[in-house]
Structures are given as C-alpha cells and as structure tokens.
Image 1 (spheres, rainbow, N blue to C red):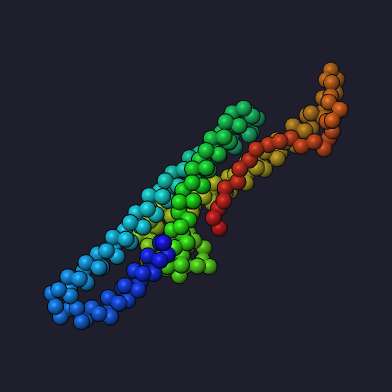
Image 2: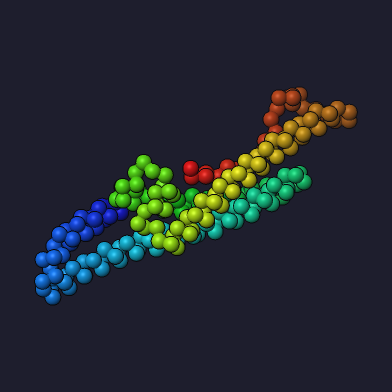
Length: 203
C-alpha cells in the first residue's frame, strides 16, 4: 500500500512537471496544480510524522536498555543473582516493546525502500540519505545508531563477565566435597544456566 502510494506520487509529480507549463496559462490550471501538490505533501508529512514518532519512542526505549545494562554489569560483578534476574526481565520488556515498534515500521520500510530505490542498502543509512530525512529525523536516527552500538558493545562486555562468573561458580562447586551430598547426575561438564540478551545492532 505504502509502496504503491509512493510510486503513484512520483508518477503524479512527473505528470505535473510536464503539464505545469501548460497549466500556468490559466488560473484554474494553477489551482488544480496546487491542490494536487498539497495532497502529495500531506501524504509525505503523514509518513514523516510516523517515522519521527516511532524512532523517537524506540530511542527512548534503547536509552532505558542502556541504563539497565550498566546496572547489569554492576550486579554481575557483585554476584547479586536475584537482582540481576529482575534487571534481565525488565530488559526483556523493553526489547519486546522495540520489537513491536519494528513490526509496525516494517510495511513503511518495505514501501519506502522500493518507492525511493533504497533496496539493497542498509535501511538506516539509506533513510538518513533520503529525501525523507529532515533535520529532526536525522538527529533521532544518528543518536539511535550510536546508542544501539553502545548497547551492543556493553552487552558483549556483560556476556564476558557472565562467562567468567559462570566458570568461577563451577570451580567453587567442584571444591565442595565435605558435608555435602552430591547428586549422582552432577558432573564437571554440567552447564550453569545463565541468561543474557544480545541487541541487534542493525548493521
């Protein structure tokens, strides 16, 4: 639907460009030209407003995720597993919200990519360099791109801390021999379950 509308608008703009010189000769022709151009502009503004609103909300959620990831790092070092689990659950909530926004954006992404010949390009880079990228949208997208990368790097670091903590925990468990009845199914190869979530860096 969006792809069709964008292509239709481009076709109309082409026709208007060809007929503009003819219409300029009459007041009625100029009025028709301005009305059609206004309709195209209104459709453009509607798409732009949706993109700005969606990506601003997504940016706010990523900021919350980044803050939670810093807390996660601290809790991993302090081995506060109960609090860590709460943080991870909270992160999952924000990730689900971001996934919801991305689902709503998908038809726009497909339509805009085909309508503006952005297919085959990185979506974020293509949108930043497109005619849709007003200064306000560019600012949001550039900030979003940076915070997603920061979050990805921090979660990679957190994963390393989790792996290290897991290894230390296994070592301590293996040292417990006296006064503890070990389950027969337990062995040194058992894995300690940990929870971690990676963020798609959209690259």
